[in-house]
Image (cartoon, rainbow, N blue to C red; front, side, top):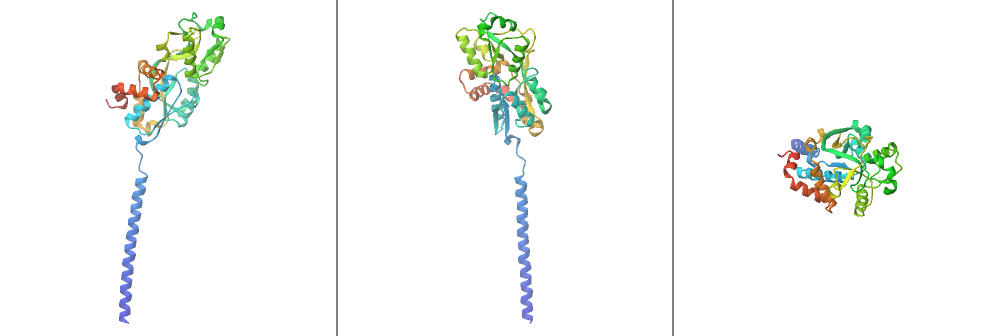
Length: 305
């Protein structure tokens, strides 16, 4: 009897020991799992977060967007995507947070209608380029000097104004100009590339042509051109190009936002990139060339003066 009692006690102690060891192991697993869970929810570095940049397919905006993409990559951002859209979807996308920012906003006049629609939901960060003009442009050899003279010379121009993408601000202003000046002309939608191709052909043949154009643009370096006077002031004073961001970007990515605040350059800067692209260099290659040749300005933007 005593022997059975002793066996029972030894078995009970052994069972308690095994149970305690199991609990300790389980506790270790829970603790390890908690540590893994904490590590799994660790905050992602700002530099590893995806950056989406919207832009319009204008020569200057292709240049500026490719440059700012490479500047951000040089600053350490690992996932920087540029996405081309028309002007309307650009503003809509920034307002909705689909794009983090754009360096392509022509304000306060050319894209005023888009700003009026979406401006309350967009952060105006910084003017990145001053003194930007839009209007109707002809080769310097064309004898007229004013929009008011277009109707009297309709046959020379075939009754057409060659434009760019239909959603752009300059096209909408030109529609207004046709109405206000009573022009008997058709506004032909195209693209920036299509418009400059038509301009090149006309200049090569020394034929009259009237196009929608803006400054800065490589075309003014390539050919002798002139703006037609706009007595009614429909095309307004010179615009600027502005960097716009989605609301909350300053809080989400403060280092990136700081770069955008410092991103300011000149007509000479942007036209050098535009001219290289027009001469056949890929946009990313032209941007890389400019970034490499302007380290002081790039370091200033990044904040590494």
